[in-house]
Image (tube, rainbow over all chains, first blue to last red; front, side):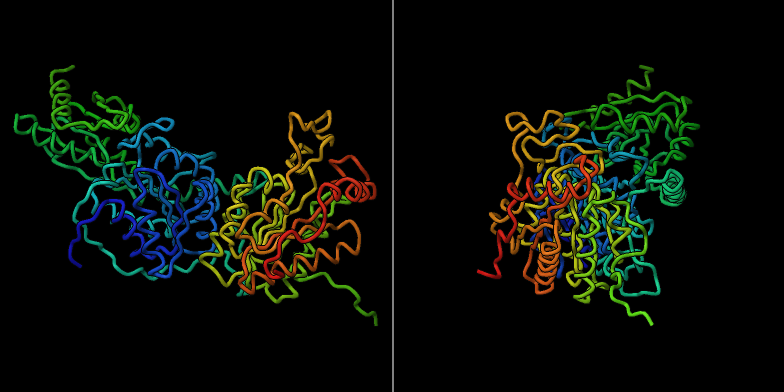
Length: 353
Length: 248
């Protein structure tokens, strides 16, 4: 299929449909509105279901129901709406249901603003709702990658029976870029014997989708199994992109759209004779600790750049274990860092500031 | 040889119910289960348990089940029914779940005329958490969070769900019944079966509000509870059909 020019939000929606998403439940919030709008138009054409729910709380619980019944299902929102979904996400994680949740992050806290931000890193990667759980968190840096990761997200969700979050920002959602869908037909879905959609085969026990375990020993066992699964994900699913890190003296750590700006800054630095590379985690959870740890043995310093007050910074520091200095440059409130600003920070670091 | 005069429905599992002695949840469970069995829908049924005294309903109804977050059962039911229209989907919810934290979900499921069935058990109190005031608690009723009796000035007045949902344009069938005596148990069964039949016929959202007792948290004996329901709840919550588009 030829490349088409699409807005990020619309590419995300179309990618989901092409990956076999049969139901979408959402609620309007800027800057992700084109996802539900697109879904409301397309879902009836593919015999799927679209509901504009009464709230984000209802939307995520519709996801719980549809996922529990065995369908590929997605919801999308932006930061304040994702906060509302956290109750449902925790239940989905515990009940081990596959689904894709898209967060087109805007600035916060509170109502914040509608411009791009990365302020939801902690919420996405450290649990978000109550209890001990993780999501697989995928952070695209282009419209093409957003489409790819949505499709991969459905597969990962099914493979591990867990919710997957695609963490974009207002830039990814709103900008237009050429995109080619790597999958145009839904794959053959794995058999979901656990799904609660009618107990027709009496040779198997009936299905119960549940997250209530009153007895301590049983609840402990549920948690142990979740941990075992998360360890498997950590072992198998880390994705990271390295840019000119082979000979780098300095490394910029950045994710999502900011990593693209960081690459420009790295190019500019090299024009000035400073060897700079970029490490871009594609999976924010599981986090590529090893890549940063290895780099820490080779470089003189790292600069973590984010559109927040320093959230991924903590994971980078954890990986580096104090072996090299890790500086931080952050913008907030919807302000986007420029390559020139990042270059200035690199020069400061080189000068030991 | 002895003749079988009564057999428990296959739609209930063989585990002992956790409900308190004299609580009428058990009767309502049986009516729901019998209705599904008699309609031949056991293989297609997917029930949604609430948070509250009915939280373990997934252990009792012998069909596919999901356990929902507090108040969210109608949203979960919506998700299931939209991707599995051939399923017979029902929620079983109490008054804390449906009439307090879950009001948005039930109102909008009704507004969309979602084609599932809700069994709403109203006993005017939070049972599972130990007898706190519910939106359905009567004015003057003593609970652990209205120790001086529900004060209408500061704690408001009871929420009449069956009447309220009857005003929602999308809703298809709403009826309030009670299980305080045999005649009303029979009427309740009829209403529940009709609510399921409506779903099978593709008519849309049907809800049966069933008045129920809570001897433990009302501080009454089972028999006193029956009388209390009759004398106090029915005047506030009159029995009958509040909406039936099929009869219009």
